[in-house]
Every structure is written in C-alpha cells, then in structure tokens.
Length: 237
Image (tube, rainbow, N blue to C red):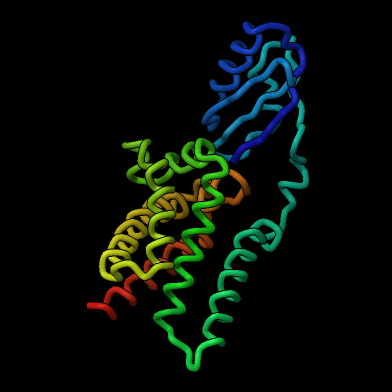
C-alpha cells in the first residue's frame, strides 16, 4: 500500500535525507520518497503503519500527518467498498464479453473465455502500467520469482499485455493458454503463501492505483485464470 503524508520541518536536502532514512528504518516500510518543496513523504508499506509509529521514528523537529488518506476511514472500510474496483472490472468485462455472445447465433463458451481472458489481461496490465514502479515494489513482496529476480515484476506487466493481445487476436491457442497457465500457476504460489501466512500486504493485481489487500479474492482471481486457460488448453490439444 502507498500512502502520502505531510511532513513539516524540512528546510534543506539534508532534511530530506534524514526524514527518508529515518522512515526507512520503520518495520514494514518498503520505500520512501520525500519532497521538501511539497512538504510530503510518500511511503510504500507492506502493511498498515500507524502515524504514531512513523512520528516516533522521526527526529523531534519533523512532524508527520495524514495528507491524501484518512486512516480512520481506511480501517472502517467494508468488504464491498474495499473490493469495489475489482468487482466492477470483472462485472464490465463479463458484461461486454457476454453481449458479444448474444450477438452470435449461439453461445460459444471457448470464444467467451478467450474474450474474457483478453479483457482481463488488457485491463489489469493497463492499471499496472499507470505506476510500474509502484506495482513492482508491491509485487516483489510476495511473488516467488520477483523476490529473487526483481526485474520479473516489470516483465510480468508486459507479459500480461502480450497475453491480452494474443487472446484478442486468437494467436496460437496452445502457446497462449500454455504460457497463461504457467505464469498464473507460478503467480498464485506467492499469493497462497501470503494469505495462508496471514500477511497484511497490498495486492498488486491492479498495480498501485488501488489499495487492495491480499486476500482470498486474489486467490479466486488467479485460480479463475488458471482454470480458464487449462480448459482452453485441453480443448485445443
């Protein structure tokens, strides 16, 4: 999750460096961007960190306060409000792809799944590309490959884009579905580990645009892609 805070007391570049280094020492802080001009600090964290803990990490001359988010509201968010972005995305992709089928003489399940997968990968890669760095910083926290090879976080985004285009143009179904099955099967490993270990980290499925927690919803999302690619893979064998 990425939060932006107001930080007062910074007057020079040394202050920026001091604030940044102090905040980086806080447990679960992944990265920090500080600006004395804007009097702000943008913090990427593995799980929610209270303002009091952040303040304690800073020297007395610096004061930190919430800026672009309301901590109380964040804590009180309901399930539906939290996952509304991903629910709406799945709803729109499902609606559009089903409408395409209604235009046909009969329902073609394979074509519907192919169109759904195309929409899924194109939309999700789009949101990730809005903030590639933010996505990568979140993804390396749980993905089994990205943890060891951080560049994979960036490659993964473009892999999704290519897969989306491949599904859309119906490029070699065996290769497209085979790669999808492999990529998503590997991806779900880190998700399962995080959820089963009850780690409170941000799900990177929609990049850094939305603050979605890792949960069973993420597992269902990945499992659905694995199931669809497996069905289409066997169909084309």
